[in-house]
Length: 438
Image 1: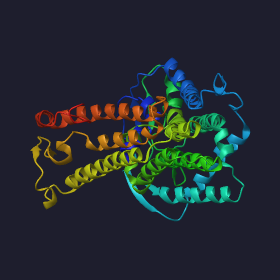
Image 2: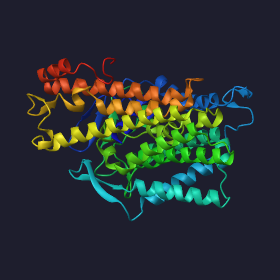
Image 3: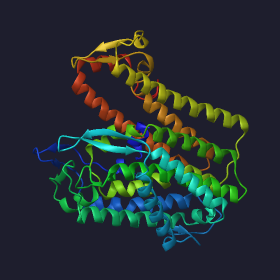
C-alpha cells in the first residue's frame, strides 16, 4: 500500500528523515544533499525515538500498576533473550528473501545505467513466518505472553541491532556500481552520513538493504506483533471484539501492501533518500511497535464495545479502504490510458505540461482522495480503543500529519509543473483531504 509506505512509516523514520534536496554532482553516482540537521538535533532524535516509544508503551498499561522511569515495575528494559528474538527474526527474513518464489521486478535506474531488480516475495515470507509462529505456539515452544512481557526489552534490542547494523554499513560501506554515494554540505557531515545514510541503494548479494528493512523488518515485524498480541489474549482467555477488530483491520492493511509490494519501489523515500541509522531504527522499532500500539493498548486495557458500534466501525474501515483503492485505480487507469471509454465521463483540465488533470470522479471530491481513505482506515482501527486515553490515537494522528505534509509537497510540485491549470483545479476542488473541512 503506497500511501502507508509513505507515512510508515512512516514508515518513524520518514517524519524524522529530512534530507532536503539532492543533486547529482557527476555521472559517477555522487549525490550531494543539502540538510538542515545539526549534531545536537540528530543526537536528540536518535536517543529520544526509542525512549519515547517505551514511555508510550508503558503508558498503555493499567493505571493501577506501579510505575518507574522508562518502564513499569517488574518489566525489564534489557535482556539477552529479546536480543536473540530480534536477531532470529532478522536472520529468518534474510533466509526467506531467497525463497525461489515471487516475481523479480525492475525499479529505478541505477548509476550504471541499468534498472535495479528486486525480489518481491514479501507475501510468501509473511505467510511462512506466521505459519512458523503458529506451529511453535501450538507445540508449546512459544508462549506469546512471555514475548509480550518483554515488550520494553524487545524495543531496546531492536535499538541495539539497528545500531550494530547501521555501524556496519557506515564503517564497511557497500560499494556497488548501481548505488549512488551520498555526500552532505552540512558541518555535521560524519554524523549525517551515519544517521541519514551515505548510500542510496546498498546491496548484499540479491538483497536490497533498503527494500529488506522497509518490507521484511518493518511491515512483517508489525504483523508479527499483532499476531503475538492476539495469541497473548487467547492465552489470557481475554479476546475482546475490539481487539479482534483492530488486529483484523491492521492485517488486512498489511496484506494489501504485501500483495502490491511493488508499490514501495516508486515512493519518494525509496527512490530519493539514502539509508542510514534513522531509517533502519524506524523499521526495527517504530513500525512494528508504534503502529501496533492500539492492539497493545487493548491488551492492557480491554474495552468492550457494543455490536452495533462494531458494525459502524467496520463500515468506516470499509469506506476508507474502498475510497483508497478506487481512487488509486481511477488515477492509475487514467494515467495509463486517458482515452479509455471508462473515463469518458470524467471532466479534465488540460495542463501546459501536456497532460490532463482530473476534476471529477474521486478527484473532484477532494484533491487527495487516496490519502483521505488512508486516514479513515487509521482512525477506524483506533476507535475500538475508546476514549479513555489519547495514546492509541497517536499512530493515526501521526499518519494524518505526515500525509498532510506529503499532500503539501505534491501540491507545490504540481503548481510548478501545471501552473495555471493547477490553480484552476484548486479553485474547482477547494479541499485537500476532507470535504468542507480541510
